Length: 292
Length: 165
Image (tube, rainbow over all chains, first blue to last red; front, side, top):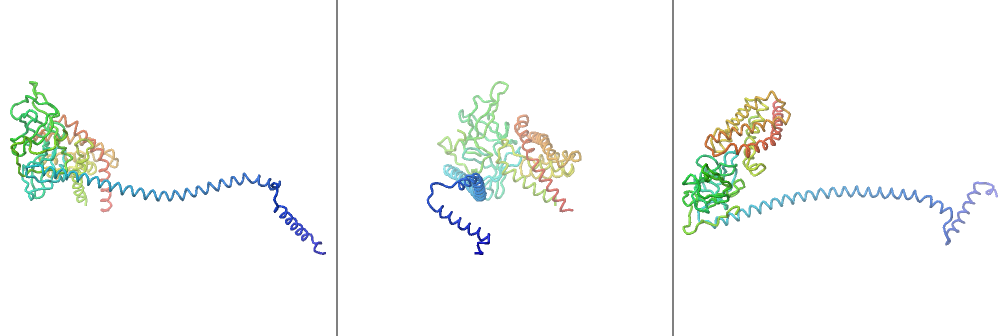
């Protein structure tokens, strides 16, 4: 009896009984939740919502951070890959361009009756006032001074200096004294002399070979090499007349010529070692008239 | 040391000018004159004596490579180095605007001189036409490249000064 005299034991026993009763009561099917449960659940809901929201934000943020790190690595890899492919593509485009140039060159050589040697342009004259270029063929390839240099589009110039393995080509646009080519107007067959310079950089001057004026010369007339030329085979396009100049008697005394060949974009040229002009045809070979 | 670096620089600049820069058509057919830029910049930094000497040697080297009348380039570049060298004590060396302006004016003056010299040796050029179509674009082109070259010149001088100290 003395146990019940101790209040602590009494309270613990009562709580135990109460809990047991609650367990029994709540273990049964109920019509609805109790008021106490309802109160606490309702009170906790907003707080839980906030916590839940924060949890989602933190989780999502963490996920984003880790994902971003992954994306960055992936991005770096893709960038490197793009760079590699771009470089490769550029290389392929360059190769394709070279291939086309070589194919064209091979076709050009085959179509010509002349004995020719193909040469690659190594460099151009560093000065703005001289128009020459250096090619990778020289004495060892049988090149000699004053040999004609052409491209599939037309006249380039002539050999000015020959070294063992390189040669200097003076372009038809070089303005120095003595640099001229005999030609004729394709439309009228009038004989002309083409000298370098006289207009903008990269242009030539055309003057009549016989008289002091042209009887008939118009803009866009094509000038070709004449049969009288010692160096060049006949019929090779030299350039197109872009501006005619009138003298005091209102006659055309000279004209400015734009070369057919883009002389600053040359990579491969052909040196004519020996020319064989065909007797029957007007033009020696199917030389492509640039710009026509 | 300085001589070796300058010699290598001149050779490399001419090689670049004859190959890569010749392919770029920024201002028509005009190529920038890297040697003229170097000579003007060097003259501004070191004075008329060294400027003229570099102009003479580099111009002569370029003339030999160009295959035209030898001496025109040497004379023009020596004059460029000499006259810009006279400004050495009047200018602030570290300001990149100074070489830009000097190269612009120097190109207009000395390339005109260069062109007139070529014409006097019977080159078929028309000065009035080319002054507008070639010399002016060349001056713009050169002055755009001048700060870059001048910056490298300053770096080279600093490097040499550190090595010699």
